[in-house]
Length: 311
Ligand SMILES: NC(=O)c1ccc[n+]([C@@H]2O[C@H](COP(=O)([O-])OP(=O)(O)OC[C@H]3O[C@@H](n4cnc5c(N)ncnc54)[C@H](O)[C@@H]3O)[C@@H](O)[C@H]2O)c1
Image 1: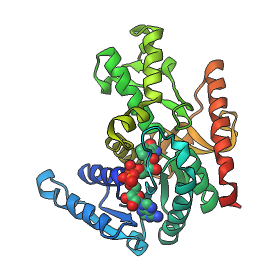
Image 2: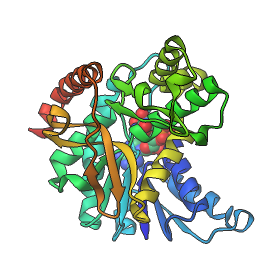
Image 3: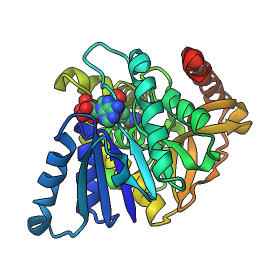
Image 4: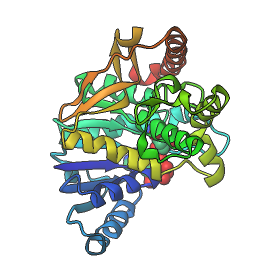
């Protein structure tokens, strides 16, 4: 199986490294606009083959999309990341032009690929890719919910003082500091509701920490994070390539699901070889439904900024 990742920066290269090490694909192509940069990252990853014990071929390319031909999955991470104090939304103007042109070049060379959009503001970039590529909705997937959910489970495990892999939980809604919705009511510690172990105050703090999880790291690092984002992309692409049917919250085009239409926003999806194989209809309570509607309003307002690009 072949995967292309556009953007060989922090997230793209980490994602390639995780995919190679975990052997989820036979070939990975890294593309970047910076002369020689993707080639350098690819070669560096290839030189970990014998010490880490994998045989995945990793190829770099400076904007030559012919090398991406026949990819099964393409991942778009190209664009600028957040700096401290910036919201994901402030990236829209620059990243929209980049995402649209990159997506079109990828489609020319890999007409059957499943598209995974990572560049921020991710829900709006996913909507842009969906609208401009004209692909069926199962083939355009925004990655944000996998990352937000892994941050949620990390904060829950810290609050519970229990191993993160014993925790289940999801974050749905928009991939923004104020739009994401950690579903604390449905989170569990090995199937037992976390509310049995944590007070409402502690659960509220976990949810608040999750929502600013990205901003906290941007403040600490001076740019947005990459290990957890790269690993989350790998987790999602693994479920596609290996037809794992994992339930992962992803930003997908909605046509009435969760009471919303003409929008890409995070909802739980079954992810397999066809991309989004099913949108799971979780029974939200009234408060969660209201949060979802508010989140969708915010994402839709941002999509309005795409009018000049989409025509
Ligand atoms: N969805 C998520 O959960 C999530 C998480 C983290 C970061 N992000 C987003 O991912 C994007 C990348 O973040 P990063 O930290 O890797 O940034 P980065 O600056 O380290 O890397 C971005 C790379 O894109 C390249 N690039 C720019 N324009 C290009 C083009 N037209 N074609 C090919 N390559 C191009 C740059 O040269 C750079 O190497 C940002 O928009 C960031 O906000 C999303």
